[in-house]
Length: 415
Image (cartoon, rainbow, N blue to C red; front, side, top):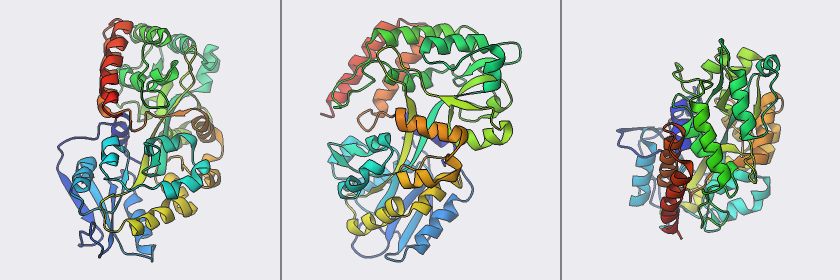
């Protein structure tokens, strides 16, 4: 439901900046903080038509409290973080970058009492972005999945099977490349950003262990895979310099490439253009690792310093736990996303067959995200290292070792 640019920001966690901010609300009351007045609820600006009208309608229909809805254009994270730090002007908000230190400082209300009873009905990976120190600080709203998509007709013509290992993926990209199209699209940067975010989790140890205490990047399997990614970068099999980047399916639809990294959000446009000539597969497991589907997510959060925490929690519960029809509408009518709650997922007709269902099933089984302990600074350190390996041909073992040391130091500050 986010625009392509905002989706990219969500994936890379690059949410900080100095953009000017414009706010338009559905009332002139700034709300938030005090015990009186409406509940002030924040949304970032969605790119899809109809979203703003829909959230305003839901707020107007809610009868147990007045909701002052704020629709933020510009740097949403900067505005929300400033309000949270001040403790004024915000009660309820959506967020895709829940922060460990902010949670420990009391900037988010503990929502464990709302999430715990329904945790078994939530998409397995969807709890990770909202979990800090064993507590839940958000209710998952929408989940975006990213993985490889491909043209079955092109695979059949080239005699290529769906890759089940990284080596098979590299070879498939080469074999699928011909005078008419390239084998693989990983973005106009040659894929360094995508590979940094999604190849290490497929290696033994992942990026961070389940206890969020140890960074693991020094596996020989990861070094070998990234070295082969540099060879792929130089092979002429990657689409680069496309008119639009990977999150826009234009090049895939046009037949310029046989395989592409892509998000679930693009599937409706692809299906409309290509019918059933599209399918998906996860990032293949490296030896000793596991397949993965990259996940990003928006979550509903209650401001920890709000004077109306219980009222805000009731709104969050109604909207994102109890109102199944709303969750389906929000996920599938304007954009195309996975509702984290089981009832909404199973009742969403547009997610119930074809490649959309395939992606939902793969996400349920293989979904991965770094979570709050994998900070933007850590992501940047890893992306820089992978870029040097993939683009410049730097030694993978030494780059990964240095990145692991840097990232471990960052993780240690969160213990």
